Structure formats: structure tokens, C-alpha cells
Image (cartoon, rainbow, N blue to C red):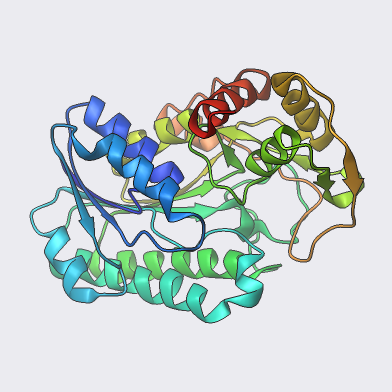
Length: 315
């Protein structure tokens, strides 16, 4: 298949592109290499893909309709991962979030409709569950109690996709990602921040007084669900993609310490605005309909990230 992959220089996008190319697919990557975090990391990911057979990188923005139109021509699927991610950056840049995550997604949807692309797979987030509080979270649970603009953006994406499917029959699959981590990860995510601080002898900021719990999901497992969604191309579905395990934040920290070979100094801080105490995915639906089987625990995944970090930053 020929696949348009937006956000191809991003964390999940990079790993998805690699896997699709390994499977023999042709991938057109679209990314604007924005400065939300260090563009050098995005450039380094793109460089890893540049010489791969079947890969083309287009530098452009999903807010530019002409670019979206041009890059989408002749593709068999659109995998839309481009977005401003994360909860806290939106507090200071709400206009950018609305532009990129709402208007950008609209541009993608409209071109999928006009060019009659036979399948759209897009990234949603566990953030849509907001203050629901029910664990494990199931796809049928209420998602109308948002705690962040980012979560609201992703809920809006799901509603927009549903509307376009209802009106125009576009096959759409939304994927709610749960706390993704792994090599080449984002610098604003906990694992990167913990590792960076520990290896540079800075204290770790532990929010929620260390009493938080997360469904940490290794990036290769997420990609397996993504690729299955592209292949299955369901008519209209939303799936949780998590590990299906709830881990204590402090156990995660201990794995970072063990992988780095040193104990961290810690500063325990209150919960941050927009955050939740715990997350846990019910993945029964993804297992049944996608054949999704996450395999990597934090005991295996965290050392792989630390190994990558040491090599990449030569530490």
C-alpha cells in the first residue's frame, strides 16, 4: 500500500514509518518540524528514514491545505499522527492547539473526502477520558468531562471523524494511546525527563507526590496496533491502545534508576493541572478486532530507552 503518514518525524510517526517500510509499504511522510521540542531530534529521526526504499519526506504543514492535497494524491490510506501533543504546553499556547489539532484535522478529513481515500486512521488519546475516573477505561465510557484543552481537541477529532463517516461513508479508525514511551521518545515525556535529570545529577520532579499510576505502553506495541488498524481498515471504530497494566509511578522511577545505575535525588510536588491520578486501558476490544497483543513491560522497555538515550547523547 501507499500510505500518507502525517507527523512522520515525530516519536510515534518515526517508529510507524520504519515498521511500514519493513513490511514493504510505500510511505509519504509529512511533517513541519516545528519547535514544540528540539527540532534536532526530529531531524535525526528523519535522517534515519531518508535513505529507506519507498520513503519520501515532505516538509510541510497540515494547516496548508494545498500541501495536504498534494501529498495525499494517490494514497491508499492516511495515517494521521501530526498534532501538538501533551497537556501542559496548551496552557500557554491554546491558539496553536486549536489551529493544529482542530483546523489541521479538518483539512485532512476534507481531503480524504474529496479525494475519496479508502481509509483514515488517526491518533486520539487516553486524555479523552478526562475526569471520568473509571478504571480500566473502556471505549464505551463517557468522555464528556475533559480536564485539558488537549483532551478536548482529541475528543473533537473523534466527533469530527464520526460526522464525516456518517455523512460521507469514510472509513475511520481512532486510536486512544496510553502513555507511550521508548527510544527516540519526546523530551517532554516523563521517561526522558527522568533519565536526563538523573544522568546530569539533577533532582527528579515527582508530581502527585509519587502516588500516580499509569498504563505505560512501549512504542513498538503501539505501532503494532497502528499497523493492524491500517491493514484492517474498519468501517468506523475507536480503540484503546495501552499495555493493559497499571504501574506505580515510583516503580517506573526505580526502573530508570536501575537502568542508569544510580539513585536519583527526588523532589515530590503536587499534582499538575490537567493531570489524572491513574490511567488504565481496557484493551479487550483491540485484542479481539485488531489482534493486538502488547508484549513489552516497563522492566524491558525502560532499559531500552536509557540505552538509546546514552548512545544518542553520548553519555
